Length: 226
Length: 226
DNA sequence: AAGGTGGTTTGACCTCGATCAAATAAGAAT
DNA sequence: ATTCTTATTTGATCGAGGTCAAACCACCTT
Image (cartoon, helix red, strand yellow):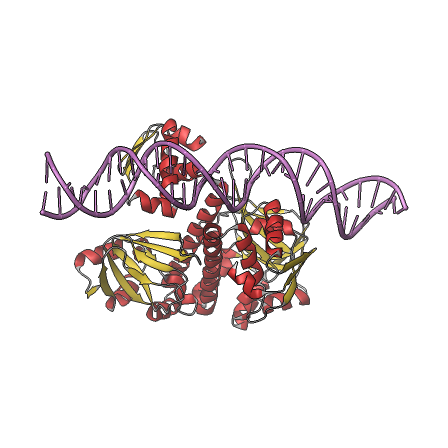
C-alpha cells in the first residue's frame, strides 16, 4: 500500500459521485482538504471486523468487497463497492469499530476521509448530515433487498433480477458487460460459483446468452416472468 | 383503527426509548406536539410496499412486522419491531415511498410522526440528525446481520444465535420468555415454523429446554460451540 | 507452438430446509 | 371441565443448492 495525494482525475471522480455531487462546494473542499489516497493490490485486506476504524473510504478506482466471516472460515459477502461509492460509514456511529471485513477485489485506489472530521462537519452542515442519512439509507436498502431476494428467489431468479437491474426499462433486446468476474457476482448473490454457472445455463432457455463477461438478453419479458 | 392522543404512559414509553432518550427536551417536545396515536387489531396492514408514506412510526405497545412480498405471494420478513422502536424512516429519504409492507402482529398502539416535520427538525438540530443517523445505521446493521446469518449459519445455529442474543454474557444457566409466538420467530429467522421446531429439538441435545414460550439454557458454552 | 495458470463449467453426490399431511398440544370460550 | 380453535410438533418426501472432482477454456508467458 502506497499513499499519495489527490490528483485532478481523482477530484473528478469524487465530485461526480453520488455522495459529493450533492454537497455544497465549501463542505466538499473541507472534506477533501486532508484526504489521504492509498493504492492497493488485489486481495488486500483493508480492515477486519471489530477492529478500530477511524475513516470512511471512497473508491476512486477498482472494487472493494465487504464480508463477514463464519466460525468455520466461510465468507458471506455483504456488499460490493465499485468506483464512486463510499463505504465504512457505519463504524462512525458504532464506536469506530468495523462491523465487517473489507478486501479489495482488484487493484484499487481509495480516498480515506477522517471520520471525526466528517462527523463534525455533519453537525455544522445540514447538507452533509442529509447526504450521510441518504447514504446510510441506501446501504440499509441494499442489505434489505439482498435479504429479501435471498429469502424469496431461487438462484436463477436472483440472477435474472441482477440482469434486469442492469437493463434499462422498456428495452427488450439488450447486452452489457459484467463489471467483475463471475466469481464476484456469485458471492454478491450469495451463491457458489457453480450455482451461478448453472443459473446462467437455466436462463439460456429464457433468451439469455453469456459469452465471457458479456451478457445478452433477447427477451426481457421472459426474464421478468422467470 | 382509532386515533387518540398521547397519554402519560405513552409519553413514558417515548421518553424512555433509544431514539427519544438521547434528544434534547425541546426537540422531543417539538416532535410530540402533533403526534397522532392510532390503535390497531392484530394483522392490520399499516402500509404496503411502494405506497406513499409520510410518517414515521413509533411502537407504543404491541409488535409490528416489516416484510416483502414475492411474485408468488410468499412473504419474507425484513424486521420485527417491539415496543419502543421507531420504523418506517427510510421512506423519508426515498421519496416518501414505503420500501416494504408493514403489518401488526398483535394488538398495537402506534405514534405517527410527520416525516416532513422530523426532517426539518433534523436540519435545525444536530442532535436529531445524529439520532436519525444512528437509527438508520442500526437498521442497516440489523439487515446485514440477518443477511450474514442466513448465509453462514444453519437453522439450529441461527436459533442458537438468537437465544444467545437474549442471554447476558458470562452466565451459563439462564431462562427467558419469547416475546412473541414461535411463528413470528420463525419468520424473523427466515425459517418455516416446522424448521424452527426441529431446530429447537436439535438444540435440546445442547442443553436447551423449550416449554411453551419459555426457553431454558443449561450450558452456554455448548450453545456457543454449536 | 507449448505450457502454465486461474477462471468457469459440468457431473455426481449429499445435506439442509421447504412442503404437505397428520397428530398433538395449548389456549380461549362456553 | 368440555369443546372449539389455533399453535406447534412430527413424519415423510422432495428439490435447491453446496461440495468435491474433473474437464474445459481462455489468456498469458516463455
